[in-house]
Length: 243
Image (cartoon, rainbow, N blue to C red; front, side, top):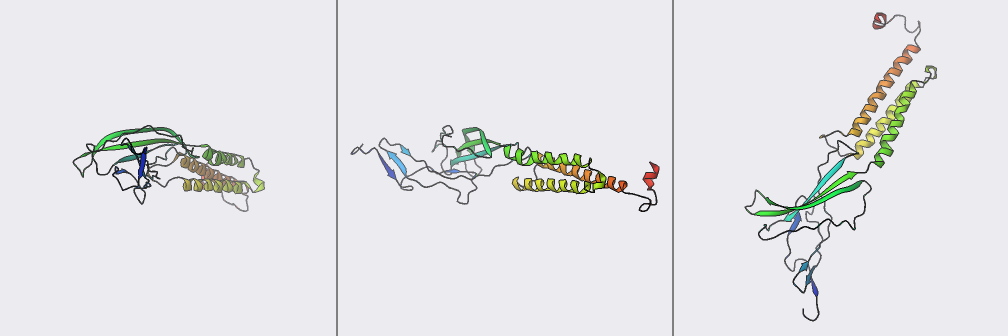
């Protein structure tokens, strides 16, 4: 230690540092870390902790949406140094500064190092995999989508109790159908566009729409028979005559 100086700071690029990158990055800049100074201690250790915003692509399984669980993997490794030149060690996740998200809950997280051989090279490289296991919060979707749709479906049943002379039976069923269609359109906007799976919430809304269409059809049929008379229907239908 010279002159009681315990550490000095080097600008990024002035001394060597490992070229560890996020392999599965989808950021336009690929390496999205900030080139901060390197902290060099008097005992020879160098500390370099570049902050960054990392963007990756996660394969989503939306079948159980909005009661789904997802896993996202961050793959870090050296771009040019094999495992005989660079050893990578990992430490446990530090979530002390984590701010809870309003839509997702981190259920579990893992970190491990594995050796991997790429087709381009004969050397073996070390790769670090950070895996986040996420669970979606369901309160928003249950309170704003599922529960209102269930309450609206009660109107389908109540529509059959309305007196035919009021002439509002068909209008009520059509209003219910339009309300369910609005819920379905809103759900399509908030779910990822994929053809690999159909979310259960979408199946629920489709089933509600089918029930609403059937209820509307039966209501029109009942109304038609209720208001029939000898002036508007002189002949009996073929199937009605058989029955």
